[in-house]
Image (cartoon, rainbow, N blue to C red; front, top):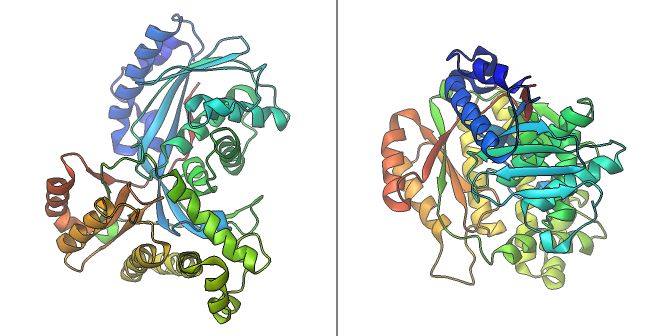
Length: 426
């Protein structure tokens, strides 16, 4: 759509065309998009006739299955109403330029899509990785300019990096691939960029939740074709709100802690001659637990035990939600949190006993909930966020109590978003 026409459409004050994605927040979203378009004009040359496209990709929340995806297990995840948006104009060159607010511009030549080790951990590596994977799949990409801004909290377990890479893939899918890629393919391209170019050994759950929308149950038994099904979750209808509380702690120097989880689970799988734990019979694991401890160590054995139990819990959570038994679902959430604390051991980096922010947040959350609702570690763990299902009549009390400890603005109340990564308008 011409830039001038699109601006006028956003300024009408009645953006009903945004409601399928943003619901009652459509007017606020229109304001954000209009502001981003004005920001774009201050960075890149454009005119009233510039061919302008708008995109959105949501963050995600993990509802079940903590660190099960990389072992080809099962997960329950949902898109949330915090998103990354992009204003895009094709530039007719062989260069991609993306200016993310408060970040250095990511600029990639489509004539150089090799891995640059020095770019690992940066947004430019994700852009290069997405472009490289699409080229390998046979698509001829072109250049474009983009400005992005995000409401997805960094380091929160809401997957800001997955939202960004899936967003970039969605942009290129619509501009250069004729919209041919499915949400699963978008997710797989994003995961490739993160694994190979960003140099982070993540599973596929984050990208799938960002790409698909709603709440999805995922079975990674076949990593090339994960089995997905939508699960209906009406939190407000059950009288609950979903809260994410940010510990505000640094993720610096925690890479080894995150990497140790799949490494140790992989060691246990290797003891049984397998690649991942989902290939190991649970009964055999229990029979040979003594030998596993000797071969792999106690922490690896405990982390494997967490996998087997949390993997099974995902199926039980889905069954509870599908039969409308929210109390059973919450009980399973609490069990998952206990397992993460006791067996997975991703609630604190135990080499530094003075700093255990997630454990402290969980302790206070349980006190504030007084046996109602549920809380658990969220995402990768160690220094990020906790998740809580809070009864609506306790929400103000819960929020005030958590922010008295963690700081004003630390408690975020989220909604499940039905739309995944999408083209808003072109």
